[in-house]
Image (cartoon, rainbow, N blue to C red; front, top):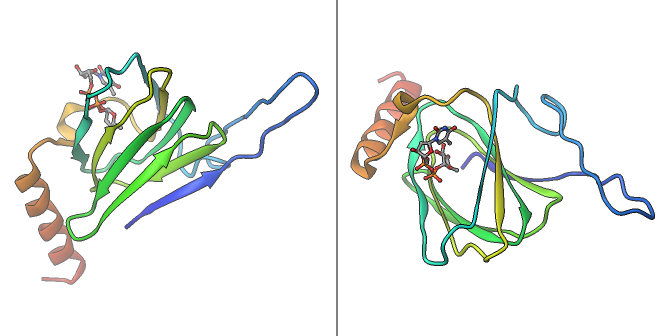
Length: 140
Ligand code: T46
């Protein structure tokens, strides 16, 4: 599964902490879009889709939340509760974000502009897409 937790280096001093993120440095792609979610209601489950080509880094800049990832074979759960950690997720991964703390702010850096056509919102379609891709990679 193409997922990794990236640890950023804070520029700390007596005033507090500052984290700087630059494309193709801390973030492994060109950043075309930033969005964030806050005031997420306690029982909400966000996401529930995959992307055909979008790559993203998720950072919980305040509070905490969990992310469930599924590549069609393997499932993983990651807790995001540190503003100096970013979760890199590749395309073609089913994702769900849940267990948001009341103070959670989840910021996402994305490799492309918003495009509804890049979303796979049905789980069976996602599994078919994974199969197609695996077939292509094996030259079938
Ligand atoms: C993802 C996870 C981690 C826009 O107009 N522009 C945007 O850039 C985004 C992200 C959303 N929207 C609109 C589309 C919907 O009407 O905002 C509304 C909520 O979006 P959505 O239901 O897709 O939000 P999530 O939290 O389920 O998913 C989001 C991203 O859409 C998705 O790419 O990977 O966060």
